[in-house]
Image 1 (cartoon, rainbow, N blue to C red):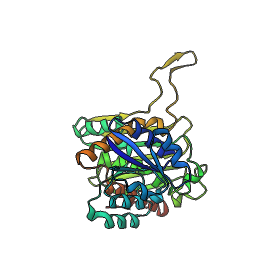
Image 2: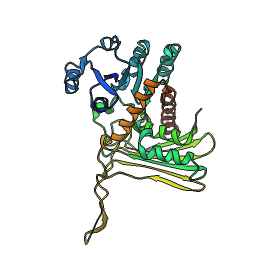
Image 3: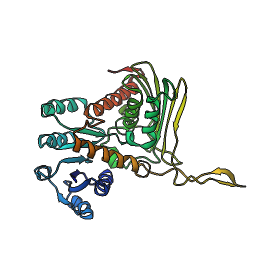
Image 4: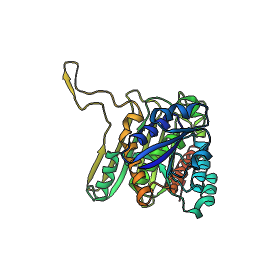
Length: 332
């Protein structure tokens, strides 16, 4: 049984706590949160210990790995501390909001051989993973054009949005990683963003907007289009379409049931799409943790790793620059 400590007891921390505690090979041993009482409340649900100080948790030799689900500005400090303590790390995205800080952290810990995985959980979604496997098997020939649609039903809470780094670093970064997952290295980025409304008070030049469209060109010339929205009236809209020389693969939206109604009021009437990311990606979070636990136990590579987290942030920064300048931005 792998003893895991969790940093952060907010919305995403609660997802990880439940996933760790219910996993067949993992045990939630600690919950750490500096907010008084927050860790104790969540830890109490699962019989874990609670702490307000990271040092107390990382000093526990029985803890083999940590999951970092705390606010983004704390990620690098916790990654470094965990690496110094010899713990494997699964850290939520984004790795940070500043590339210089990301590079400085890696330079500081690299010699210790850190084991760090970044939480791009959509790589572990069964449908998206299947698309990648079938592309690799040659089913649709050469992949030429990728279309990623990612729309949230509503904007994040204002308190969260203020520190999230804008739509590209917070939301699109998942899709930028998915583009790399399916296409490989990206060479060019062009982005446009609509003026902010419900999604924030700052302008799109700061990366905070309600809607964004990003076009990517891979290093070998293939194309990707990403469509994002912070406000989708019909639910959590999550789709991927891979078009190749020999055909096309699609991953469609999910609904609570596959039953369709045929009546005088309408035909093929379906239930609304799943409403929130916790419902849509519950299986992805489970598979992500299973992979992480298995790799920690076996010593296998952790992927997506620190370099993948950095690469996605580079693309997010390029999207922000493209919005500011109106130009296509070369990367890599």
